[in-house]
Amino acid sequence: MLRFADLELDLERRTVRRAGGLLRVASTSFELLRVLIERHPHIVTHRELMDGVWAGRCVTPDALTQRVRLLRKALGDTEGGGHIVSVHGQGYRLAVSCASPAAGAASAPPACARRAPLRAIAYVVLAVLGVALVSLGAWGPHAPKHFFKHLFG
Image (cartoon, rainbow, N blue to C red; front, side, top):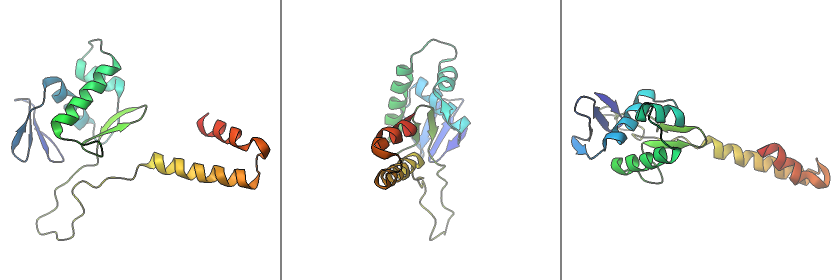
């Protein structure tokens, strides 16, 4: 039995339950979820997922993307959040662990607190820095060109 957040995977029966209720999860989606739970909290690369789920069969990255979409739908995840997090250019990971609050804990944190997306924060900081450099004339008339060249390589 594997547990994550509000999900329980029964490896022998190949079933997924949430709050005691059985979810309809296809076999390949079950394998995808199993690999993600076993590797939590780490990012699982596209290649690791394809090898772990399809075990040496030749599949395209589109098959993985499609399977993640189907798994998200089966779990009831929404576009704004859910169990599976896409890590651009790397792979996927499960969202932050969702522990149930202890009984009687009046001010327990939310069951599934989300971290702020660090990449977005970094881009905002870099954009502000770029605007400051441009306004100070640090790179002369070609400042935007140089800034974006250094930012995006």
